[in-house]
Structure formats: C-alpha cells, structure tokens
Image (tube, each protein chain N blue to C red):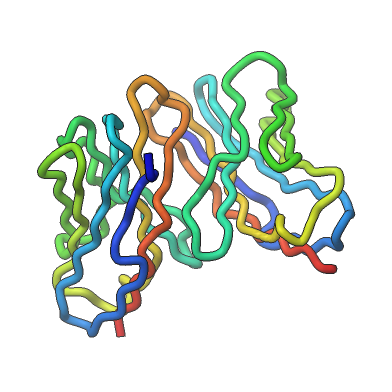
Length: 112
Length: 114
C-alpha cells in the first residue's frame, strides 16, 4: 500500500519570497515520486519527477524537489515565486502498482 | 498531438438526469484513467483501462457510474441517475506503456448536479 500526505492545505506567500510545499509518503516498496501543478480551470500538469539517481530534481518554472528516503519526504521548493505560480500543487507516489496515489493538494497563493 | 481532450468542459444538470462525460486520449497511449476531484476527497481514481479493457473499477463509487472504452481513441464516463453529490471535476488522463512514469491529464469536466 502507498499513501501521500501533503501537510499544508494552503500556503500563502508574498511575491519573490521563497516557498516550500511539503510532501511525505509511505510505501512498502521503492517509489517514484511526482509533483503536479493545476492552474485554475485546468488539468494537472507534471512539474517534476524522481525516478532514480540524484535526489535533487529540477523541474519546470524554476521548481525543484529533494527526495529524502530516510524522512520519506519529497518537498517542493522555489527560491522566488511569482504571481503566476498561484495554483494547486499535488504530490504523487507510485510504488508497486501501475497507478500513482495523489495527495490532497496544497493551494499556493502568491500575494503581490 | 492536442493532448487529452475532454468534453464538455462544464455540465450543469438536474438531479436524476443522465450525464455522459467524454474523453479522447493521446494517440498511441495504452492506458486511460478517469479521476474525480472534490474538495472533500481530493483526487480519486475511479477506473482505468489498458488497451481498451477495464482493469480496475474499484474506485467507481456506485452502480450509477459506468465507463466504457469502445476503441483506443474514445472513452465515456456515464452517471445515471445523477445526484447532487456527484458534483465534482472529472479528469481523464492517459499514458503510454513506453513512458509509464508520466500521465497526461485533460482539462477536466466540471459537473454540477442541481
């Protein structure tokens, strides 16, 4: 079985400030990890993924995430956010099954 | 490719009516997924197909929900009869056997049952 916990349902932040969106997972097997972004009235779009290799993964739009196996975490970070980063962010884990399990999502709200 | 295409984008219907949501996956993709997104439950997998065959429908909430994939380029999710609690955004996603680590999502259908 696999599960994902996104610890914050909403993260407000000012423009140009750094942000971290937290994600913890559990799985009995090795995992692949993903972050998706959903802009208003849009579908989910892949931001980045960890499959193997370097634990620091860089994605689109200046986002990056770090896989920490000992802490079973895959937190998403950006050093300086823009208004356009306002969206819903989903962490997902895929272990032995074909299907990823999604977290409940974190709403990133960037204020001017 | 235009990506995963869902229609309609928005649907408002009265309780008791039949609702049909449509999805065209990306050409060549072997897997198709139907998800439902609500504030209360987040993103839930309803059913998925592999090569047009339903593999796992354990996420389908009730017998009122049914899904079909008559060919590789088209799938439907039907709710009959619809109820207000079915109001949600329904997403279709597809992926290729060759690229199993990335699913591509459609823009969703926002269903409102009044």
